[in-house]
Amino acid sequence: VDFGRGGAWMGRARVCVLGSANMDLVVFADRAPASGETVAGRRFVTIPGGKGANQAIAAARAGGEVSMVGAVGADPYGDEIRAVLAGAGVGVEGVARVEATTGTAHILVEDSGDNSIVVVSGANGTVHDPVAGLDAALEGAEFLLLQLELPMDAVVAGARAAQAHGVKVVLTPAPASPLPPDLLDNVDLLVPNEHEAGILTGKDAPEAAASALLDVVPEVVVTLGARGARWLRRDGGGDHLPAPRVEVRDTTAAGDTFVGALAVALGEGRPMPAALRWAGAAAALSVQREGASTSMPTRDEIDRFDR
Ligand code: ADP
Ligand code: NA
Image (tube, rainbow, N blue to C red; front, side, top):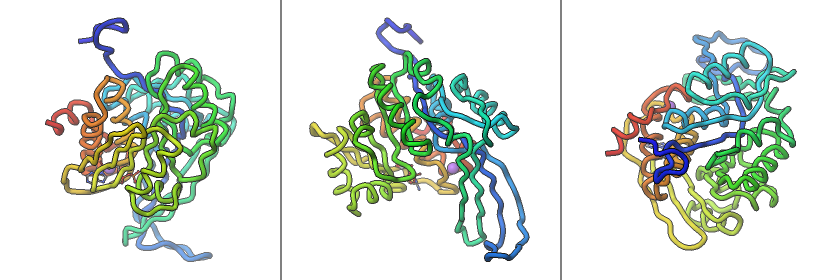
């Protein structure tokens, strides 16, 4: 049932994502080559990724009305990424095709499970303030999801524009780096994992890190992997949400799945504890499957799991 914009129920959550899109180029080998050495690889796969694209796909699969803003190259990887986003139901009008190679992440997975990664930001690195297509995408949105894989001036501009449109800003501070005050001023909810929370605050204990982060943002959710998530609000309140116990196969993009689903639940008007529980169900489903975008659950799957 959708009563429309003016009705009692807002219907689908409207989520905008300003962020990165990469093609992950993944090779599996016994071990990494030393400098100057060649080793034989066993398998090679290409998987659309990047935190922005991952969060957009997660939110769309969770039932959100999602649009993405960013950039890919005018090349086959860029075309494939746009097609995969569109196939998941993500609006890609704001994903520009630019004169640069599509961002790539070159990932070597060793038999030991260790991996090494080289990221070439490519087209992502061309996204700057003023960000083309951003205002149009923010029109009517409830949440803007930001991460730190685009140039910082674009992230800052995104948060500022969102506030001007009355859109709530959710920042995933990954990869962890110092957060400028003009960004923090416009962040409503910060969602670091415990590693990022530690780097940002210099405090190892998640509880202490979350408290410290309340000095700079009004609300924090620190994700704790298999231990769930710690939610804390400046004006009092908060909770620890345990994660469901599941068989883990691949935790890639668990955090992105969590954030995408969380924004959808909040955008539908669910209170934070219920939204966190539903996001935890989505992420728990994703860790039971291989891959990033390929492992993100649909709304029905999340609802069935979260009974
Ligand atoms: P990231 O993927 O960014 O490193 P986390 O590892 O903290 O972030 O995972 C994000 C969320 O995914 C957690 O808060 C939790 O809800 C869920 N999650 C991650 N690992 C597991 C797991 N082993 N079992 C169940 N849920 C998990
Ligand atoms: Na997964």
